[in-house]
Length: 271
Image (cartoon, rainbow, N blue to C red; front, top):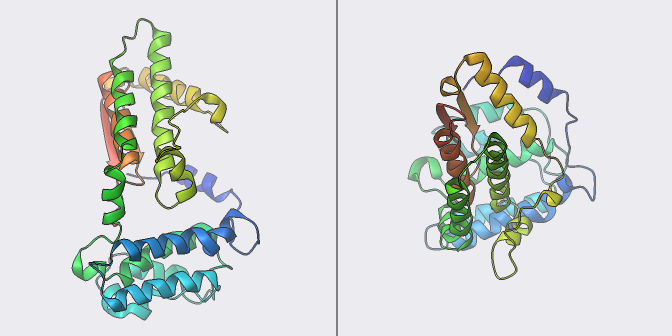
């Protein structure tokens, strides 16, 4: 997938969030959310991780809490030499003097996941350190309940152009709801799993709703192309499990109901 210069320019207009403001989501991420995720990863991999791997990952969790310096990939030479992305991370981080709680938030969070792969020796073993948590998610009822909701929606008859639109809007919102299953934010994920889960995805729960603009864009592109079957929809995918199931459900709806002729999933090169 080619990302346009116009899109990148628009992204760069946004304010860059840093982790050094107490009480913000960015700062709290390194005090509780991300350290907790790493500790859970160690707990779920007790049968697979060596004592050294576990100790290094638990140290990473403590380092985030105590605002330690962010280590470079080259400090883990054996693993970073086998990684296709470590050199890029080295370029982004070298000489910046970043600490976990004084650095660009999104950059640091994405790099933390790369560090987990390095410390878990993913590049030599090929074992995904997040695999146990992914299996646990698929063993729950929530992913399959949401998928069944999608199947039921897609089976409804579209009697008019308005119902054709409304169906797609509901699918877009259901796909959005699947993002609540993102395992890196446990407090949100827990709202759609377990005994107290809610699978309600009413409009009143949305902060922003661009679904009408999405439909208008698809219709405009179809008119300009002369045929919706000539359109290609690109996904930038995040996680597997519930999120991927609902991404697939929306893709199926787009294709089966004539909104486009092709869907491409751009998935992560690494766990």
